[in-house]
Image 1: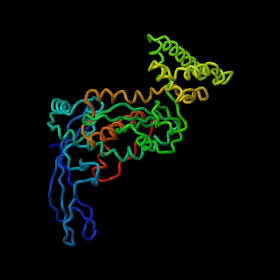
Image 2: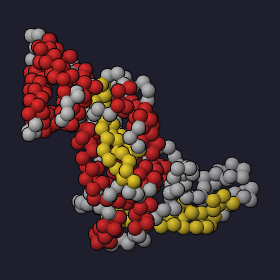
Image 3: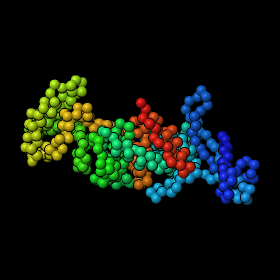
Image 4: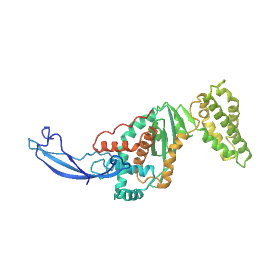
Length: 396
């Protein structure tokens, strides 16, 4: 044991009178907390610290005994894990476990091994899992309020989705990312999920793929790199018409991207839309021609271009907008690797905890702040039944 901390009630719950050390008191329960703390002056890293918390009851002059109870958050229907100071792992230790699990992609068993070998700490796999779920529950209000609001108010939002697994069943991992926030949601691939995230009145620019649910929003962009990759595939095809169509699409994409890059460096003498009008008209005619092609991938690309025709060329009118959806694809890449290692999540609660923690971690990274002290502070507040502190402001 490194230290003791005594907890006394401040006021009598019977009469409301203030209580002080002069009143009769006794310890009625105790608990231990293990946490990682900064080392002494001149040292680096962290050390494991054990605190014995003594909870006392004090007798008021009115004769009533009042107890200082460990903090506990209110129960929530969708969470079975408790938010309470009764848990053995302290806030920074929980943050460390979250870092090992979500950033370093370690399994529960590997985290257990790391803590034992480097800190001499023996925690069960169940306790480690409890820490991750508790942290995910702790940040849930921040995700639901601050992050959802930041995403809905974004002037430019990148959206993408990829496959995920929950206990072996296929679901989808969605990402919505803007300049100062990243939100992850795991759910089905339905219009209801998109509307739940963005609402029905999202008014910013939305960069996305061709999923039909995104078409409910007016200001849309499509990723040109996505179409470019498909066109290159057709260009290398053994089918003659596919090669011809792929080459034509690729040429137009390259011309448009070059014109946009040039416009960003110096104002064009002629509007880009007029510059590219002839090429776009020829491509539109080719898409209509190949929309019923017998070659499957040719037909698919032609129809994809026709379905979202205007969204591909918005950059000609607004060269400052992005040409690709790389921002969302990069946001998903780390978690796709994690999915391949872990095979996804096992329970609904584990899925919610994962999505919440991933959202907080990536948002803090976007704001150039470390997520771990913030995560520990949120947990510290929520275990006491207090509101979670707001996310750190973006660093200028």
